[in-house]
Length: 561
View 1 (cartoon, helix red, strand yellow):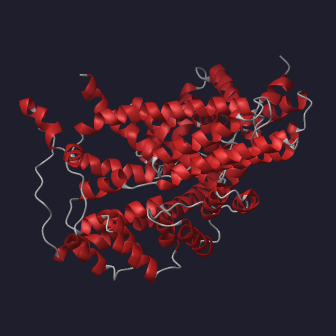
View 2 (spheres, one colour):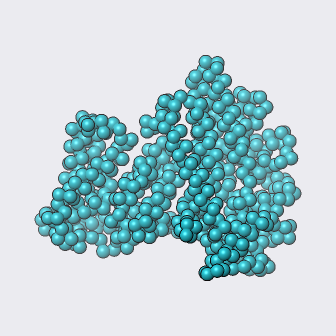
View 3 (cartoon, one colour):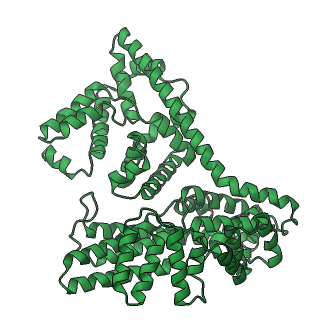
């Protein structure tokens, strides 16, 4: 088949370059491997960086195979982020998704790489994997390989020839290309060897600088994640001891059968934890009854007086307005008042506009609802404070004397997410609106309404790392409902997809999430308290999906025995 047809089928230049580079490198290695084995080994010892991290030496031999095992979307996200050195905004633009979605896609791809390495006997943490790939992944490709790729593009009769030539000189070089570099260096003169050594030293300094910057960023992120826990730990010194909890270290022998009766899952299932007024008092005093502490106290005790106090003291706080908008006994007028306060206090957040649109739809004021939808679509930020709410509630339980495992687990199991149902209701109203436009003969407005509904779903479907997977499932369902109302052959996205293609992908994603949830649910009764802590920490840093896969890898074998 003509090469031009193959190029036309490629989603992007960087993906095509990756595959072409890899295949060309493999062919060259296959021809020269036996003849140059001893020469290659000698040169590797000469030019290999002696300060390369041990993790890279273990990762490098299987990195090509791991990258090839990824699906196209995950591979392209990693290529853009680590091999092309794009930031998340640039990755998102290239993939046609938001910055947050690009970050989540990269995190998932890194986790899948880590799992692949684990199956090959290479154990490395996800955070360490990011650092080692960032520091070592980009190398210079051999000149001969650049000529091969650019010549292929020129023969295809496309405009890719010039781009391929320029890009090939700095193309992503996997371990196979590093070996190709060794092969080319063997036949070079002594003078060329000195040049290569000098270039290697320059690259080493640049890589070390990049690595130091990344380590500093990781340290900053870690400090941010642990700051609230540190404050809570200090306040525990003056509190009553934590409630007595039986050891949950998995026993051996016949006593193993008692694990499901004593672990955290069983305790919370039998006795859902709510804090008393006495238990929450020290937390409120330590935080000077701030807006966030009053809201956490309201959620963890269920006392509506605490919410009322927050509403009176902090009417301009966006999280207070958010909680007040969902107050059970609020009248329509009071809800409207707090939604307007939410819009004012979080002017860059699209969520209050969406909530306002739903209320206008219910009131029959479609024109005002459409205005709110237009306003929401023009805002990049979308925040429902789920992560903040869970973090604040965790601190409340810690201060009240609950164990670390209990404090990390209870908030996510008891937190109410009323906004999810309203988002689903709103999406159906938008689909109905599109139907009305279509009946009136306004196909353009109908398509716009459906696209806005699909975008609403994507804002939850591509949720931030740490968000619960139920939010993502709702987002996928909203987007699927919008796409169901479109022509399946109509263009959708920036990679040549159709609405039907996207529907198939969303259906697959939903099925995978549900299957993972079922597997995880079956393993929860087996977990010890230390594993609950590790599970929740992984959830927060890498996402619930990554935490679930870790849990299945650890306990799945026990379940099948």
